Image (cartoon, rainbow over all chains, first blue to last red; front, side, top):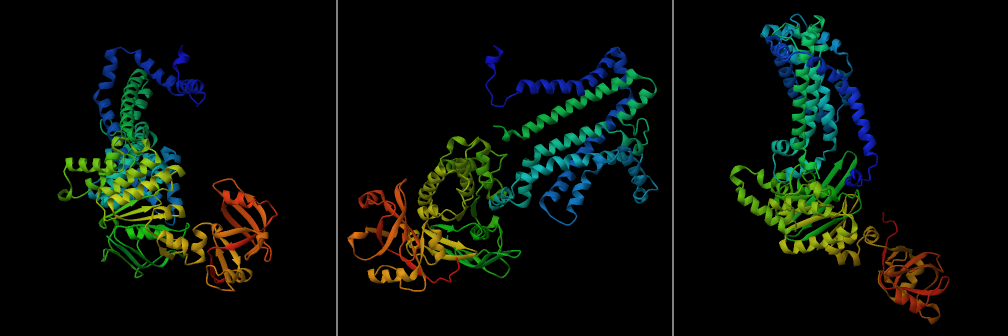
Length: 277
Length: 351
């Protein structure tokens, strides 16, 4: 009976490929994650709530989500500019810049963290000029934000670039023959076309920033209530053998990230509505 | 509104796309820019549209006698239709057509109802009323092209410019759509230029054909003029099949029969396959003797490949199938050929 309900498809292997996908995702993603849930399920509700609502933990959530979101937004804007320049213009050194974009992917995050810290610390190359202007970067919220922006850049560039490449310049010409100003071409024609890929890039950069540890712990200073990110807090709990507390924080982090990413996916689906047939 | 382009030159690096081109399009006419790829026809159209600019100091573009050379595309009031439609994929058909009205400054912008009314009127004009809510990806090629046309017309352009408008469509749709364009033009009478590399298309629907080659205008005229009286060997060859024959033997024959072409013993004779008459050899009379080498009788017309006895040149002849059966031709038969209409050109003419 079940067979009769499946419409005939010329794409073979749906059953086997879906089976593989589910099994693979289960093994690689779901099993480790559910271990965290199981561990947290061992706590009483009271302990769980107490563990995840202590002021120190809430402050860490605020920092992690806030800085990651801000970094994602900044990357969305500047990643678009970088992708635009790389696609639309040709200039000497273009290949070099193109390769440079991927560097934050390849660099061990600890190296990035140490490099950023030494740059932005009060005596560092950049920090020394910012300090007199009253701008402190290292060991503040700003430092966390800078590190997260650094590691998130490639995501937006690499998702927007191919879409931009496929966008025919003719649609811009068409818009301008119809009397649209340059600004109207950007806001009414280009950005809507790029929105799905921009959102994907943002979601990836944001998710990456949430989980980032290596580059942040050096530049943030990890002061409780001030510059302590969630992943660092989890490590701290683990070092204190507070496994329950650590997993409780992790579970809340997981669920809220999942909801956020799901929301971004829906937003993306909505912005892509015209491509559905 | 009439369009004039004077002395337009445009180079892309070392490649000269246009070389001192003059074109004059009278008001309300449908004009074809016809030429092979690389002849500069699209570049010329883009210069007229303001999407490209002529080389500094080289020439002017005039609309209705008014110099628009330095005006950007958005200010020229042109409707431009691209070969690959260039529709906005994220907008519905309705929004695509309304775009040109929505981007106007507030005081020039029609009301919401005014826009809706105009869009629906245009969709009616291009016979797409029911599809206002669809996205371009849900339409066929022919429908997309008509949306592009409606979008271009929405801003009430003074001229309509079409760049290979049917180039991306399949043969059947292309034929339907070009006849539709002709009827459509007869209804709205907007000065229109369209670019094509398809001579059949240009000859069928244009009022006037501008034939271009290597950045120059070869000939301008009505379809009949350019077909019957090609000005250059290039035009002759571009507009359909042609036999190119060395002169001396034929010149003698032509002189005898007193047909066509000015006499030019050193030139080449150009003659279309359907302008050659075949008569049985034993009936005598004038004309050149030739041997039938091949007969191709599938299709509406029969094609006979002959070898001329004196010069050993091959000649292709097109005759009706009833004529063929009347003649009862077989391979290796002898026939006489006469040229009904032919032109001769100097041999050193570059083709």
